[in-house]
Each structure stands twice: as C-alpha cells, then as structure tokens.
Image (tube, rainbow, N blue to C red):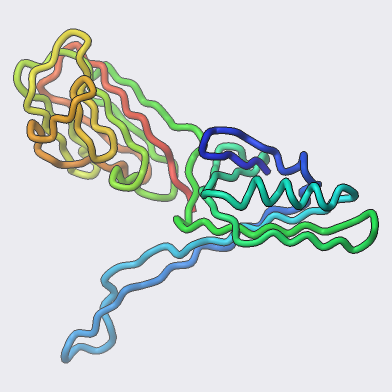
Amino acid sequence: MIVVKINGTETNLNTLFKVTDFKISSPAFSYYTEKIENRLGQVMTGQTLDKRTLEVTGFIKSDFVSTRDNLFGLLYTESFELYDTRVPNKIWTVSTDSIDIDQTTETFGKVKIKFSSFQGYCKSKTAKTVTSTSNSFTVTNSGHLIVDPRVHNLRIEIRGTVSSSVTITNTTTNESIVFNTPLSGNSVLVVDGIQYKKDGALITSKTNRKLISLAKGTNSFTVSGLTSNNIKVIYNEYYV
C-alpha cells in the first residue's frame, strides 16, 4: 500500500509494518424521492454515491512505539491519496478514521487502519492523453463514471489556425464548446475544467459558456472552423 501526500511524496506502508490485507467496502447509494399528490408511491429525483470505507490490516514484530508514532505522523494530517500496488493505476483520495495497534505479545502486534473516501470512487493514477490532427476523432472513457468537468479532471487544448471562431463537439453527448476568437501561430485555446483560456488568460466572455463531458465508452468528436489542427484531450478515468 502506497500513501501519496499532497506534495507528491510517496510512502510504502510495508516499510512501517507488514501489510497483509486491503479491503474496500461495496458501493452504496442514497436516493432522493418526492411524493406527488394523487399518485401511488414515490418518484426518484436523484441519487448520490455514499462514502466508502477502506481498511488496511497487518502486523509488526518490533518497534511498536516508533511504528505507532510514524503512522500517526504520516496519516493523521490532511486528506491524501492511497493506492494498492497490486492495482497501481487506481488511486483513492482518503482521510484517516482510525489507527489501531494491538500489541499482543512482546514481539508481535496487529495493525488495523481505517480510511474514508468521501467521494465514494477512485480515479486512474495517471491521466490519459488523446491527440488528434483530424477534424474528427474519438476519445474512450473506460471508467465506470461519466467524466464531468465540473468535478473531474478534463482538459481540452486546441492549436491551429482559426479565422473567427472554432467549435468542438462531442457528438456522443451532443455537447459543444464555441470559442469566438481568432487563433494562429503558437497560441492555444484551453478548456480546463470549467475555465476557458487563451494563452493562459481567461476568455469566458468569448465562449458559449458550455461544457463537454465524456460518456462511458467511446466518445466521437468533431471540430469545425480550425485548420492545421492539433487537438489534445487530457483526462482521468473514474471507477467505483
């Protein structure tokens, strides 16, 4: 098990104690409903994924006090990330619930650490990048969730020549972003989450203020108004 702090520092928990098991609770959902007058039952109006519990267990054979203090210092801080070396490309954002060290003999003790993932899902540890020089291309989202730029990592970069405006459309989701600005040379248009930029400066007023998400599976894109195309889509995938 690897702990990744906010500054990027990685610590293998096996250097502190012997990790023997890693458990993740099953996904659970909460539902929002409404009662409608003169209608039987209730109508579901939405759902949310509940937080998940992650549990790491193992044992130590010596240095109980120093192991305890090192774990407290490492894990009782701000939220951090955690991943299983057996599944190295899926990483969780977690907070520590408890650290329990039970010294059963002079030379042996059990360790149990519980974490909470308030998002309820994990993401790919490394971002995927799709680059295209064509007016049409595809982006594959192999995760379990829609990639929503309001809450997830999704960046679109557009380079090339634009005389007045350029439109990029995800025809799978029927979502389009329009930039009403010329483009040439080394300039770049960027949609970074919910921000629209040209060469690093915000240009929200020169867009249609719409966003593009990635559906699960294959997403078909088209671009109009751009020549000498160089399109780049950078995103993470998300899993329950």
